[in-house]
Amino acid sequence: MATISVLAGDFLPGDANYQSGVFTLQSLLGRPVRIPVASFETLEAACVESVKNTRDAIGLGIAGAVLLGPIGAVAGYLIAGEETEVTVIATLKDGKKLLAVLKDDTFQEITARMPD
Image (cartoon, rainbow, N blue to C red):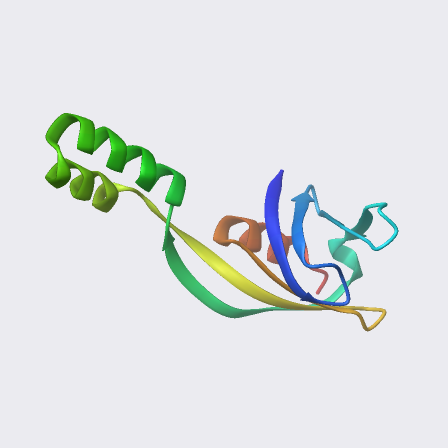
């Protein structure tokens, strides 16, 4: 299951999930809204950027600090992996819109499932 961050649109901002071709989003009623990829009219990448994996960076920074002091902390932070995040704009067939951030591999899987 992949976690995505809903930023704006016709759905509540916050964390949502994507698994096996279905988005699970929060709703005002407290019940999750399930939206299959087949319901999307368009899905466009608005922005693609590399970001430092924060959890790994903090962990490696602390480990480096314990072993080598301040220089080790900086080195640990610098060797942490980066991941690519994609900000997407989606339009559903019913006209609703969604602006969300997700990892590149999740974006690739979703676009592969999009109807032609």
